[in-house]
Image 1 (cartoon, rainbow, N blue to C red):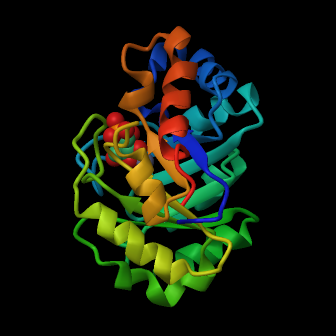
Image 2 (image 1 turned 135 degrees about the vertical axis):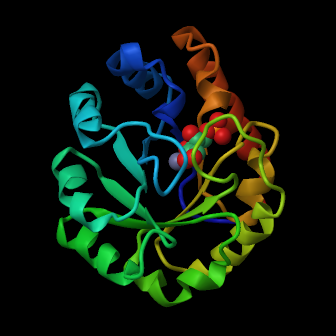
Amino acid sequence: MSSRPFRIAPSILSADFARLGDEVRAIAEAGADYIHIDVMDGHFVPNISFGAPIMKAVRGVTDKVFDCHLMIAPTDAYLADFAKGGADIITVHAEAGPHLHRSLQAIRGLGKKAGVAINPATPVSAIQHIIDDVDLVLIMSVNPGFGGQSFIPASLDKVRQANALIGGRSVDLEVDGGVSASNALALREAGANVLVAGSAIFAGNDPATYAARIAAIRDAATSRTV
Ligand code: DX5
Ligand code: ZN
């Protein structure tokens, strides 16, 4: 299990976009640690969400870490926009282009934390040679593109492998897709320290429910000290 601090990152992909600022404020006040920002281009993934201007529009609502997950290809031409728009962590997919190392260097060159994400079919070995160039590893536990999908069980073993690869480094190990209170403990025991949750927190879009849902995931994940 990870000794890194445990964090919950609600994904605003499942927020009510008509009230996005209020939704971000509500999850921040409800106990979110990171705000997970899912950017989709309709090319790298079969869905379009929003870009840097929308993220920038809600940046002023909270001081929480903006954890920006770019599901776009190519990435490099847009990194500066996300850095200027207020992202704290910028995560690119290992599958998004041929020059992952260059993209990670560019993110750090912009003064931001660099993350790498891998899709369900991509082995953890794909990131072994850039592990010293990242601040966050994101294991996708669904095929990226949509909220509300079922957790892919084989992801758990990939979390264990990524945890071993990270070793003693100060690198967040994040899991994204189909996360809920029911699998939070297994994920934490496998080594994950950042859990992304979209539908498990935002379903129904009633801000009165957010604190209890975040607490349920946190309580489940931290219910046992291993
Ligand atoms: C999927 C996104 C996820 C998504 C998670 O492509 O990267 O962040 O919003 O949603 P849930 O938690 O509903 O699977
Ligand atoms: Zn995501």
